[in-house]
Amino acid sequence: MLARYMAAHFFFVYNHLCKRKSYSTYGSLVSKRQTAAVQSKAVKKGVGYNMALLEVRNVKKVYTAKLGAVKVQALSDVNFSVEEGEYVAIMGESGSGKTTLLNILASLDKATSGQVLLRGKDLSEIRHRDICAFRREHLGFVFQDFNLLDTLTLKDNIYLPLVLAGVDHREMERRLQPLAAKLSIAEILEKYPYEVSGGQRQRAAVCRALITEPDIILADEPTGALDSRAAGKLLGLFGEVNREGQTILMVTHSVQAASHAGRVLFIKDGCVFHQIYKGGQSNEAMYRMISDALTVLQTEAAAGNTADADLQTTVQTIERRAV
Image (cartoon, rainbow, N blue to C red):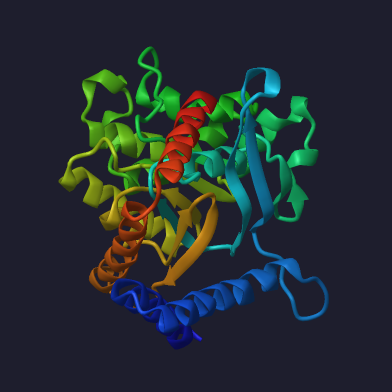
């Protein structure tokens, strides 16, 4: 099966770069068929099918400007699933819909149509008064700018979601000690965020995400504010916790960060149009495959017309306002 996915990827890259129409169409169809085959496992129900941890079914998002004069479609029929224990990265051009999708997965925004299911539960059916508790119990968040409170120590920042959930202090300590040791922050827990480095702040943020024992970690450009050394250490930690069973979904512009994931989804014009599986390959081989796919993206974007560029700019502006 892995060989088939890799073959589909190389058909996709080779045929688009060579601009041979007779093969380009075939390569595109192979990619869509392979993607559909994986998606169908999450959609079908019955004997022999296991429900994925996260399922995104036919998700569409349309933003409407004031008075309804202008409508912009940010997402168009997005379909994919994430199995328990997977490490998935999402990449795409600015304005492609990545932020909109992440907001919907985080239950910070609602899709215009379609479904997002976490362990079979439709996020759109959760009552407004219950949504914050749902996020605390099931989702862990890692942000580019850390989102730590400067008035609290790192320990108190990490404890905050457990305090809000009413967890006993002894249980907090029990959870914190092994995580702090793993993330190399045990000696700085009593310091404030402004007293430590960016890499240390991000590791504290990862600890805050993990301490709730979430079903899935949602990471938004987690290495974006870090230098190369701190980013490498963070990615190593992500790989370690993933090997221990933690599911991770990461949105990133960084090829280096994405190369650590087991699967990369590429979003273009509001839909998932290609994906790459790592299998048993090295990070270096994955890096090259991602770079090839991004070259195709950039080539096609450069050939796009002015209307497409204007639409992309509009979607990007609306996404920033929605965050």
